[in-house]
Length: 112
Image (cartoon, rainbow, N blue to C red; front, side, top):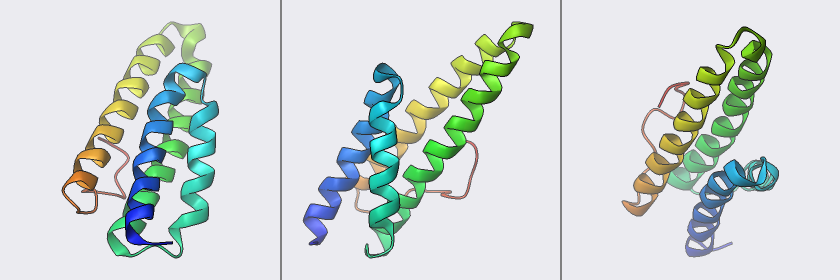
């Protein structure tokens, strides 16, 4: 796969992640599968984007599960708002880095 088509794929996966907020995560699941499948043979900057994408999915899923469990204590709603904002910011940071042709900063971070 050429660098141009992989760059387009990275962009599509970010969009799938964002649309996942509306579709209940269905498109995000497709995005994480694509990210995992394409991370191994991508050139270094794009490999970091794929890694950033699948880490965003799995960490976001964990935050969502924690929010669901703590909803009974009413704090879960705040955790869900945090998780949603966190998800949007991570995708926006990734897209911004992709547009500058660099890897996202702090790929290993659990934060923004």
